[in-house]
Length: 487
View 1 (tube, one colour):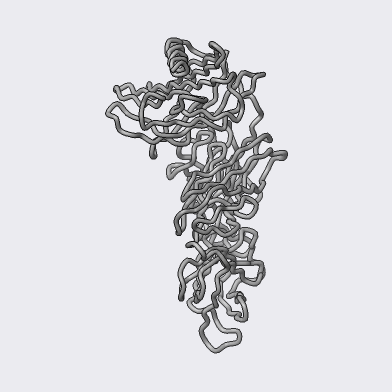
View 2: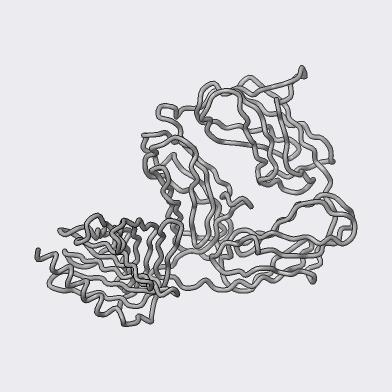
């Protein structure tokens, strides 16, 4: 009872001091910065999934991993995570020691509970991309058995139903649009890897999981390092699995010869550090072609990629480059186009300062700090926080440590009355209030991943859980984070 009374005393002190404004904030570490690399579809690059994912089988961090590419713009520490889907998630921590492109391995945690293919959203430094992971039914986690389907009487035969997609331009790297669809006959479900023989500079691969038996299609994608060489024409590419080899064909073409008129460029849309580009982020530009033919254009800077494909006719061609990715930093950046390049200037504004954030469903609430308190009272410590956003929505929470100071790696549960506890309030200007505290049944917000830098007086953490609204309904909040500096 005494501890419960102490808790409410601490919360009362937080509310009474909530009108004060905290004006100075510092970071207690040196975080790295950069952007996740993705395809036009939003899928991560290289999006490699390793290990077997099977229902009711705990995942192993050493073997159940995914890899993603990051364009590092500032060295320092990093945390790259995914959301939790189907009972598991992926996470990586470390330090970037060099600028430029690097591949990061995220390790799995948890146990899948349902079979199927799930989409994971990878997040880092305001950028996101997607990775798909397939979970097998329980007991079906081994390698698949299957054969390539063939047709015709040639030796080796053609791959049955083989269909190539995309444009294959001599001297231009393949991308996610360059695919080949093949037919296979699956005898036993499980994992598989298929890879064609490197031919004329091109390789097509696919790693995945067969979840059903019988004849089905597999889509192989040209590797990003593949660049068609030689003269234009029909190229026969062999692929082998087990005792069977079959062939498929792709047609390579000579690309157009052209140069960019950067003085004609119009940059459309707004660009803000950490905000993903959308359909309105484009560049209209005139391209002068000395010879017609297909083209596949892609240029990148500051975490942004602008691309277009099609066919040029001889003379002036007006095209639109579609933007993707997210600006990493603010400032003016000159996008190089062509060889030798001319440049197009893109102005990226600074990201607004965000001190706290959480999600409820698909809605994100975020804002800045108003007041922070850190006090010792009768042998326990109270850490109080309040902040608002542009919509005048107010976040208030209190963490109460009954054993002493707020310590890194501590966990606080607002439902607790006997150990580290706290309270959570989110106040809407229209009148509704979301709350979680020891006196509100059916609520629990857990604060964890706490870091406390006593030198800079900085406390950070994450939170998630269930709160109640004024009507008594349960509301789930997720992905909560905060950064606070106390006086």
